[in-house]
Length: 189
Image (tube, rainbow, N blue to C red):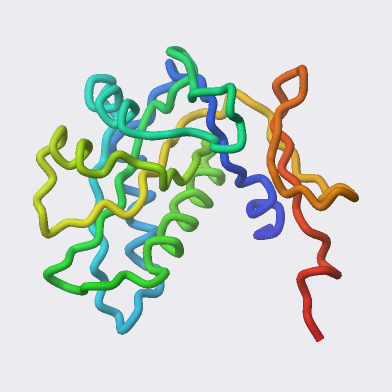
C-alpha cells in the first residue's frame, strides 16, 4: 500500500556499508525517476551513479549530514552509504529545474524503500569541490545527492511536542525521532 511505503521511507543516515547495491539496481531506480512528471516535459535531469567504494568515498567527503545533530558529523566508516545517485540539472535543456529533482528523488527513495533499502536526500553539498573531484561538466548543475544503503538505524515519526520544535533528534539508544505537525494543523480552511 502506498501509505505504508511513504511512512516507511525515512531519511536514513546510517547504513550497513558492507551490504552492496548493484549498479543495475541504481539504474532501475533512475528508470523510475525517468517516468516522473517534468515541467513542460523538458526532462532536464541527468544522474551520476556510484556503487564503487572508491567513488563513494570521494562523494562522501563532499557532503554534510544532519544539521540539527550538532555533535554528529555523519556516519562513521562501516555505517556509510553503499551507493549514491547524484541528481544533476542539464542547463543546456533548462535554466531552472523547479521541483523536478524533488519529484524524481522522492520516487527514487520510494523505489529503494520497496526494495528494502533506505536513503537520504542530501542538499548540503560542497558543489564546487565535488564537481572538480568527479570532473562534472559545467553545464550540469549539482542539485541533490541521494545516499543509499541498507538502513542501520530506526527512524520514528512522532507528533510535534507542545514546545513546537520540529528539530529531529536521537535518543540514548540511537533511535532517530522526526517530529511531524498534526494533520489538523496543516490543512487550512
